[in-house]
Image 1 (cartoon, helix red, strand yellow):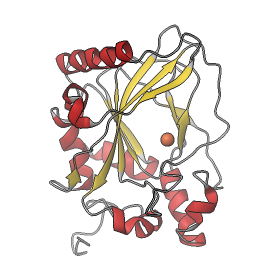
Image 2 (image 1 turned 180 degrees about the horizontal axis):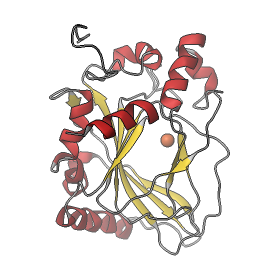
Image 3 (image 1 turned 30 degrees about the vertical axis):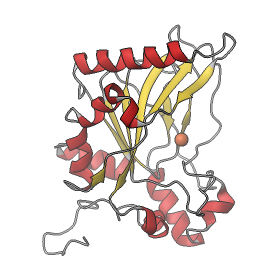
Amino acid sequence: MLDQRQRDEFTERGFVVIPRVVPENVVAEATRGIDALLAADPPEAHVTGPHFFFPDAADVPALLAPLTGTPAWSYAESLVGVGKLDVPGQVQVALNIPPFSHRPGMHHIDGYPPGPDGRPYTFTMLAGVLMSDQLGEDGGNLWVWPGTHLTHAEYFREHGPDAFFAAGGYPPIRLPEPEQIRGRAGDLLLAHYLLGHNIGGNTAAETRRALYFRLKRTGHDPRWREFLQDPWLDYDAFPPRSPRTPPRH
Ligand SMILES: [Fe+2]
């Protein structure tokens, strides 16, 4: 379980980093899994900046294990509801290869363009496992704009959820100062789907590595329009309510 301070952080800022969630041996096994992907399909020598692999989770058990075989899963469940999360079918291996002297000018949210059925690829929560230490800034860290999970929901309440399509992943909201996610290999990031974020630069010596999992509450897909306007629709315990308020689920 997250403690109260961590839950408050997720409520107000839209993300929380939980240290030392994934044990060293699980990180080591997943590191070998990433090494194997890189050996089988190495990036060309001139490639710098973001470089991704999207294997099916069933094909890479060592890369799914940091989420499902560690306390990471119960941390995520403690926000959404026990037994309410679908195991993701895909893993994203997110590398950021130096030198990459980039500073994002703005945020985005995922899910655009929509799929063949017209539904955007929204989800409930991003779980990220850091696979390399990112203690300083500009080392390939993920950038986030704290609190924008709420501002995005306000935007969709005002303009309607179909404004998602016109925005193309970049809803024109007012932005606070961004922050860079810092932590060590094995730390867990939980971020609300509606939190604005982006890829940062990498002026450090090492390639930055992370695993990302896009988690959905069971039954999320048909409710995406409602979810864009009510950021806590998928989250049983949020926002904190009076004990006399009946739960919505
Ligand atoms: Fe993204």
